[in-house]
Length: 233
Ligand SMILES: NS(=O)(=O)c1ccc(NC(=O)NCCO)cc1
Ligand SMILES: [Zn+2]
Image (cartoon, rainbow, N blue to C red; front, side):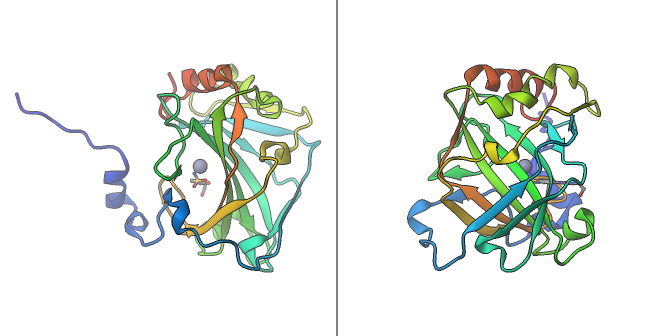
């Protein structure tokens, strides 16, 4: 019986998205022994607005929270003198607990990974424009591990039952501070990379925090039952 191998994953992305063949593709495995210790980079500084309506969207993979253009700032660290603004944040989960993160650290995967996507407002006029530039985007990556319940993240997780199908969107105005999604210790690895999904554009300065953040097993399960490997189930 002829075996038909349907390749729909990253291996086929290069056909449609030539960027995926590039030299600064993400995600990567962080080999901690090869990371150079932080030079004299200035501190990374962020400020987010808390009391504004946000919408949780089901884009067909994972879930995404749109900041709807409200004000925010990310600057310093590897970002030079440019100021970046939070556009959206989203989560990547795996189908098997402990294998959901995109980045790995010394070959180890985590249960999930949160991405806070910012764009360079000092140089560009829109997210879409910035998304095509080598210094256009900065993404804060937060590794998620199973542990205690994450109260801030729960403000989104509890809404997932209402966006079970691709394109579903629910708006909420409960105050939420994206800064509360970040770990206590803000040590990070940084490298020039790309979007981790098509079009895989090489426009991302990655800033991956070293300290994982804990989410409860129930929160992972809720995410998994809605997004197994990015597919709603
Ligand atoms: N996972 S990731 O690298 O943070 C990422 C962020 C945004 C996108 N795409 C995106 O925002 N597209 C909207 C229009 O450009 C894809 C991947
Ligand atoms: Zn992502």
